[in-house]
Length: 290
Image 1 (cartoon, one colour):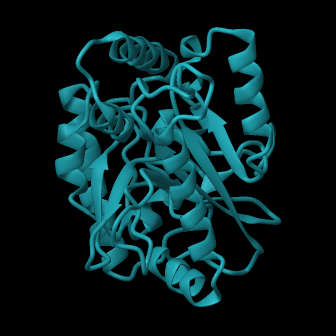
Image 2 (tube, helix red, strand yellow):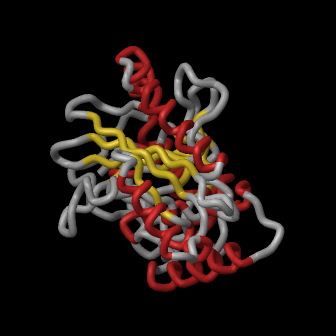
């Protein structure tokens, strides 16, 4: 035995306790005056289980085989090589036995409306859809796709499938039947762009163990937040070793107990040293241990 587990450390917050807290805080934020897009982006960074696409919108996994991100985290403001003016808000990369999915998510201020008073599609919505179309066209070029896959360490053992998601507006802001029909017709015409309102976002239990990270221009991964439901397993240890500032992110994340924060930070420091030493971790990488 070349490494040790701690069986009686402070426990992670249970999902049944955490999910109602997140839902309540999300509703409060949606109903609060004076908020902007940055407030919602920050909330989703702190609570990455709220970010859609963990299952590639039912394309990946299944009820008995939930998908997971290829590197064990969700990425905030992912860089797209070759594009410097605007990038998505979030990225997930779930994988299953057949497909490597990449989900790019764009959020807009929930106060933005779909249509003008005369029923025309608003310019803000057109701009958001045009932005997604630009990313899609950019990533279809083989040279750009190769740079993208290298940047995020996404393997090419399976076919790569991109899915784009736009989170836009509130359900209540499309009041008339004619507006609903126009919105639904537009939604049905968008192909690989999934479209949802802010009201549709819910905590996803399958994402309870995935932190949020950012990638710098120097291609360094930095932790932003860890959910208080995070539990360490040997699968995550090996994938989080390249993520910097994990301790700082844990102590900045909400809804942790202080003992659990310290325990989780200390254990991740310990596992980083184990991995760096070259000790082989196994045999069962999916077995939950701390």
